[in-house]
Length: 427
Ligand code: SF4
Ligand code: SF4
Image 1 (cartoon, rainbow, N blue to C red):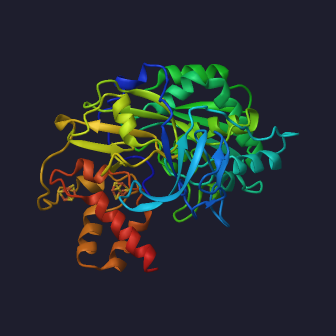
Image 2 (cartoon, helix red, strand yellow):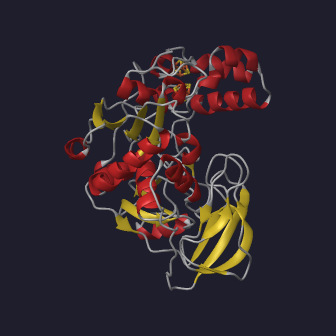
């Protein structure tokens, strides 16, 4: 497996938002809070229509197995569980809360003592999930029964445009480091390495100066996808996660810097997970920046906040490499909404896909050592076993293949589809 001799170097576009302090997005008048903001089963509502709730009050309890609690981002009245459009374009269950304008809040009970068990229980209670975008419930990730000796903290932030993690590292360095210590305690890691791309020298200097015993900072080469899990682990520790295995099989647990900050807020400040920092950027946003945004905020309110052109060339949730197109600004933010981009014509690729010219650039770029063009061919022939032999299940959806392809083929989407079919049909 090629670990990271490959990848690409897209233009950063980070200067628009990296220099300004994190602002606060006004709370929505009506919050549509998704029951599913995480990997696993949707949470189960514990409130009823007509009930008054406070900011920080539990709205829905984690389901059996992999799932996460969901909290109210505002004080107001529950209008009920409604079907509302989500990121993928489907209507899914949301709890609609209408604000009463009071912003009255409630906290979690303070922990009587700090132990690995109490921290794990608090992370689960607070509904914390991987805030880098993956949405894997953090308590499940940290609960490794002593099988990890190193915690890797992802501050790479290799996607173009996105700077929320960089601002967190600069503005919440002490809190973030305390969150890292809490995560180390919970998973039993003896040391932690914070991986940061070299294009963030201020964050590297600040955290290096503050990190203290047991925690170190690793300056990583600026190359996409440096923040992908396996590439990050290799860059920070030199360890290789075997194909088909998890980081813990290499003795590692990975959390994102925003996740670590959320762990600090839950354990030390008793604040559950109902808001996050988001980057709003792109050439069609007149006032881009980073903002604390309540979960359940309609994207249209973020467009208004940043004076963005709603009719711009493309709106993307997440980064331009791995993000998803936004079909409706009625979609609301979740725990994993790291950014919203309003891109103008000059920032979008408008060429139409043409036939493969066999240049091999997609193979050279793939950080997982796959052959995207052959996987696409196998997909078109519906030969999914062949697609599997070419390694489709190892794809990390980084988008490097599509990015470099001179024929502008939708390679990443094809490989993603092949991977989905192989999994669903158990091929
Ligand atoms: S999207 Fe998948 S196939 Fe394409 S470069 Fe990334 S890992 Fe390789
Ligand atoms: S980069 Fe595009 S044109 Fe080149 S081999 Fe891959 S699919 Fe074909």
